[in-house]
Image 1 (cartoon, rainbow, N blue to C red):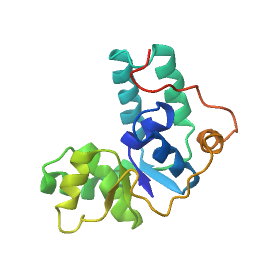
Image 2 (cartoon, rainbow, N blue to C red; image 1 turned 120 degrees about the horizontal axis):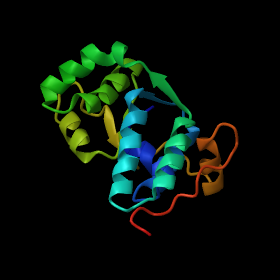
Image 3 (cartoon, rainbow, N blue to C red; image 1 turned 30 degrees about the vertical axis):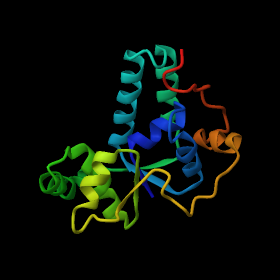
Length: 166
């Protein structure tokens, strides 16, 4: 299963969809290597908005770097991602996730409604991307077990709080 940065951020910052995102941690996950840069930028943006502190942004970025996500090289995905970006008239960095889902013959799980809508309207991408929470085969696990899976060393990730709380 491919996950994008919109899902990964929900592993460390509790917001709408975090429970569903954490439920994915027991799955075989992969993502184009750009995911960590995008997720880290989202954390920086949340910090700039006052949703999380600078220390939390740094700590959460390190937690994400330890997440059990198999990296997929951008170079291998580039031709397909670029074609998709041109076809969909959508950002290339988002299309890397769709290209990865095609390459791995799996689904992309995203919380990005705009990307999902564009993919759903495309003839060969329809059904390839699904909204976070739309994975019926995911069996919910206790919160402590999900959080522990984020750090393969068994360490506890940072104590995230609901986005927007100060």
